[in-house]
Length: 204
Image 1: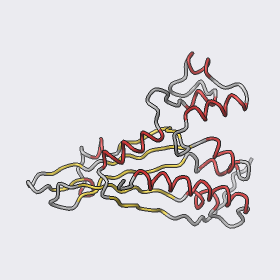
Image 2: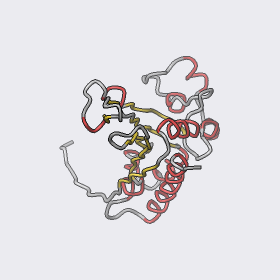
Image 3: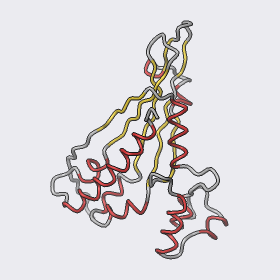
Image 4: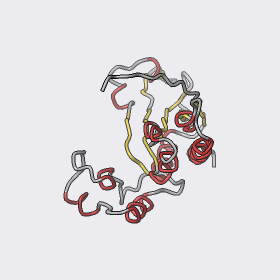
């Protein structure tokens, strides 16, 4: 089959929410909502993909065999905001080797300190299906992601947290010709994700 290409412009918003909440508090809150330490979600448990990391006899034994068991397994891993943890990329752990200006601050003691920053991948297959049933290409944009970044004023020891995230509806349905059903489903995901972000960064 001859290769063909198509350019599809999308309109998407990238949000940056700032809070005085310390990074460790924001990180703890996010993990407490999406990551069950006693019951971690392994994607191979859900998909039956024996080629991925973590596949093994345990994954095979627990793998759902039908829609009902799949739904039950997913629901058992969801946190109070309706999301489960899938992966993370701790950029702060390797940026300290290069120490770019964007990830370091100078403290009041004139010492350099590295800022923490972690990108989290989180999602809910039961939400994803509400998008994928309208457009299979939505699979490029689920699970969703949140990027927690530690913030600090130069010369200050007080830190806060920034959360950077894309509005899912723009990634999923921000193109010309998207159906209203897809837009409506994606906006529901917008609302759920924003509610989680606001809770993570709340001053309460």
